[in-house]
Image (cartoon, rainbow, N blue to C red):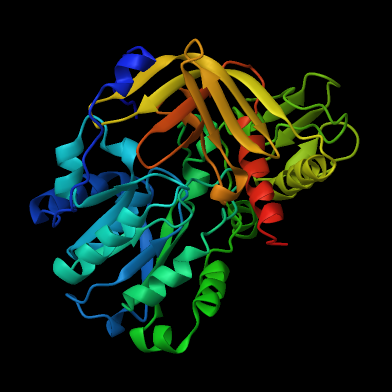
Length: 422
């Protein structure tokens, strides 16, 4: 999926009128029907099946908060299949409104910025529930999983559940990550997909529990491992491109410790520094062609990288400094390419300097528990995103080395260290 872009000098972009906040609309039934019909064909192709647990407790017109894990682009189609004809608004990243603002609003989407405190979002959610009697579909992880395991949930989620006081429903997918993992450049595999829709919390249960207890329940529900699921269920990924771009996730070689030298191509991941080759098997394991396989399980490899990043931070060694192309999001007309600059990330947070010195922006590490970073963002390139609710900067690294996953890990670890989360 691509996005509309336009080159415009930074100074000219600053003169543009920023997007005005508007209350979310009631979703149009006719558009929900169209989405349901269009979703049918792709879901038919993946043999989609589902089961519902305890959903008889929820009346058809009773608003609820629907929480769903975020695995791939097919997630919204799965939600449509499970929820139709229920009326619901969708919390969605604001760049998804670019070039199609009216359509997204009529569908019932609520814009927000990822990993940035947004008080207007809470007001919009309450407006949908209390005024429009609409349910809310939310992907609380906010970003797709890199390694197939859950990404952090915001501490504020339990407070939101407590304040809303409406039933909470959980949708969990199985096979969606294996079908279209983010690292694999939108190359879809032949995998069957299923889902489970469960009535998780009643209004009475929510009243009785503290928001810390609610957060604990939600964290448990969002504990999953897609590669483990593949292995335990005997799911074979036979496509010859299954390791393409796996270097985006596994950027550090456990044999020689070089970073940014791995290359995923075909069915193998090769370190260009030491020459060691690992195969991504049809069963979802990593297997060294020669010598020891340090991490047969991809999430274990990723967790080791996380430990290495944390050690760098604690030892005062972590530093990212890269030349980047800079895009800005001001309104819903397009994403503006404003020039280039240098993005720096240290224990003090992010610093972006560019556009011939006109642009200077900093973001403290304690402001966000994670980082909006993506692979192959709108088919432009890998991206690291920082900003405020009013203006967002999308930084496309010019380096050939993979830094996006490490930047997200570092942002998460810095937040935990600074806020004493460990």
